[in-house]
Image (tube, rainbow, N blue to C red):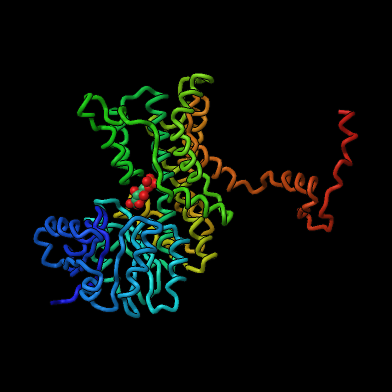
Length: 479
Ligand code: 6PG
């Protein structure tokens, strides 16, 4: 029997869809699942693709079915199960075989797994896969971390199954060891910020302007034809249009306002903080999910504190709907700028040499944050590979200058109206602070020196590095 090009362990929804996608693109694949019944059910669902799928019922049979060096995708629950699976595989694999973790792993676990396999002859790939169930089945975005040699072995299969943008596959090798999972984590951090910003604009339309879900959905559907064109705006319009089959009202109005989170957003913020890179819009989005989860506390606080709602009023600007669109666009630039800045620092710190234009390029299709906007980012980083930040590339500086007044008006109006817009406001504050050539940290330095003799640098380069603290206090008496 002809050997399989690749193997896959874990026939949950994502694993099954990925396996069907691999088979559909003409690749022969061996599959294994811990419970044989799931393998049988999967084969029954595979239809004519079953011809290219080798169902295996033991690890030895599975390994023997794959052409060496064997790439084996494991698509199982992140965490300990992955380590257990690696142990189970190790006994049957041979030198050069490649274990590929395609789950949403913490890249620090991925780094540890690379270390663990050092000296065993086996190698590892940490592979970020985005696009949800649909993406896995019909074309995800694939972010690979590992050795270039192992990438070469899997490149034909992975590029065949990836989404395409203008004919180019959205799959790439991004660097060694944890690079792929790190980039996927930041993708998710940006995803959180994107979603939160959209939700804040929805909140303004719902609570500040009294618009129905259907009317709001129509606005988003319209925006999807312009600069905001993206998967998340498209699904927001679809979500807002949907009716609850039980009550007949808008489905979104029947959903409890408590958001879940599985950890990737939080990891991106933790890593940003570890490296000292501001990712305030992403932080705000993660915190907003945490705050949303405190439903009963919020209900109690609403009773104790009431609200100070005022009408939402925008003055000046191009008109309400256009102002909101531009505000969302400006804030979105902030979230992406921050995400890319975090990746740039991680690239230096972990020696990955992350290719920023390539990352933007493989996010243009397949993944949850896919958009036309990412094509602009691809072009900006291609033209300015050494840019310190996305916002100072000429194209984005121009876009930002055009959209920033709207963000300022919208955030100011939301604050006055008593509507929470933490992610939009964080992006605005980030822009204002980032372009402030002379900030206020001179005072922080003086305070640190005052209470801890931490010292400071002088503007004039002179030698005095500690302040004469207390020396001017007497003058206050005369003021
Ligand atoms: C993707 C998604 C996917 C998943 C996230 C959602 O890129 O396909 O990001 O990975 O939907 O895990 O994360 P939360 O459950 O934390 O929102």
